[in-house]
Length: 489
Image 1: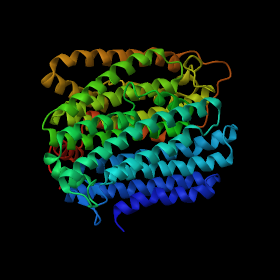
Image 2 (image 1 turned 90 degrees about the vertical axis):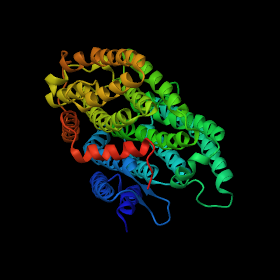
Image 3 (image 1 turned 135 degrees about the vertical axis):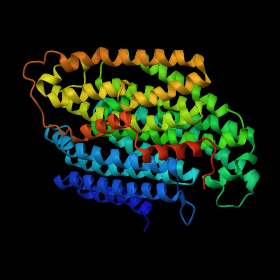
Image 4 (image 1 turned 60 degrees about the vertical axis):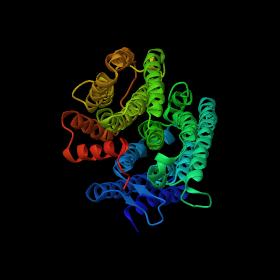
């Protein structure tokens, strides 16, 4: 059994086991143990790929290279640390009467099912399986969004299901068009027509007109999962109504996986068209999403909705960067995927504790966090400072790289980028100050809070801002070469 087999089977078996015992106190610990095993094997696999290069499974169904292996490790790490936070948090939700034992069992099983779907999407070599895995991730998170069974959560889950269902249908049609183009070149009757490695080797001879049309549908389809404007309407509702651990992995991980799928397909289209059409489309959607989400930060009244719009803003920035292309922008986008996942998951964990402390998610009711419980107040303050792009955190480094790449290739686009940074900064900090430093309401008492994952995540983001480790830099360089047109094997 390979390391990839263990990485994929751990959440799958863990999810099936938690179907039966997820409501018991030991269920939360099993969730943590499964997360730890998944992360350990994914890290070992990443180190192996780093030392020996890409690997293709014997049946060619799975392909691991420098691009997806670091996302596999990142997904497993954030899933593990969030499960540590999740165990006492969800038990407290049961004690408050917001969850029954049956729903807690559903939560734990779907949490691991969601992890399995994301890891499968990242590691598969088959574009059809990639689509199936993305749909499975949608279905598991729909059940998590509606976990509280309130009218608002059911409405959010329904909106999420409909919008992402329509989006994923567009992605399916785009995948069919890619298959059609490959069948014309490779011939019918083959069982490897949708394998990414086969398509990449033959991309230069595929019909550019068909692939251009396919990418439009794929951008709309997977762009819905990324949360690109105007396809983003599901994301703020899903974040605000679902349990906080789900918000952490949804914002920190699922959006990355959808963007990964887009970048993989862009590599095929670029090699076929020999033009920058796919990049222009991604730049346009990304920049619009970045600007619009920054403006919407100013209009929010729910703390989780506010940080969900921050996620849209940063995913737009990453989409723009991958569309811009070139070594500097691609390296910056890969770094930004990492630091955004770590920072945003830390923020949502802190937000979950802040909401429990105040008894509400309304921004105007959350006051005096740093006086009532300093760990939560400082966690929210430092997390927001980091995600806003203040030095010396890693988000500043990645945004500086993207701005530098823009000034080198498209100097006039540096102006809307700088304006967008300023607008987003103002939107976050106009709400942050009273929540952290305001007068706490009478009777507000500390809650049991597990801030270890927050401290670990923010420490890593600070480290990446001060000095990117040499092994991680070489990792990103290998992925940059691959994305920019290097050979997959």
